[in-house]
Image (cartoon, rainbow, N blue to C red; front, side, top):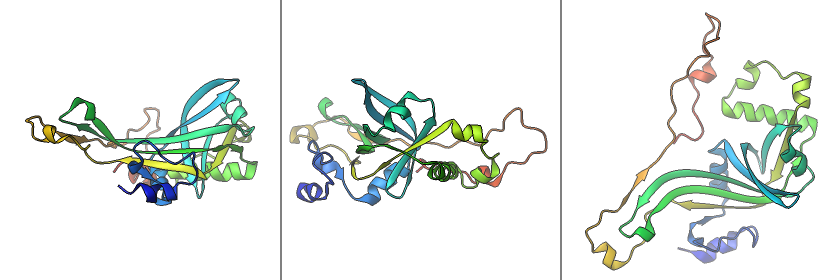
Length: 224
């Protein structure tokens, strides 16, 4: 453990990990990999004194993270005013079994970021949504029917600068007391991963329509 190095790399006191600080990761490569490795995030915020945490889809472009939703969304209407938000992404990688009940744990990778969300202008919104769509499957944006103007109007995109951000990675077995190591109880871990299944065609698909290459070659970003 090198707590001094970790603390020196923390972007701010708010993002510096205090509990289990040896699990902290502040380098941008680790942070970006965790963000890019998932499609679902959680965004926390407060409206009229009431806390909310909303799961939504996210994507990253350079040093910004983006999410989108309906123009009528209460969440987006509040966030576009610049209220503070907390953005998180978590991947569950395994279950850890210890000799001692207090030491059972999980293996995971997580990111937490703080900041103010901002509404994307129309040109930025359109480019960002194209990037998001092609992130799901390269080539999907050009293949699908382009959005109608009413669909564009019905959609908002928000983004947040990734300034105050940190990652937490737990990928090992916990340390145990010497008397537990000397005992006769089993300890170890079970790795977990996302499994991608075969494509299933829409039952309403007209005969003769071939599966496009971006579906044939699709690989979910979260599959290790």
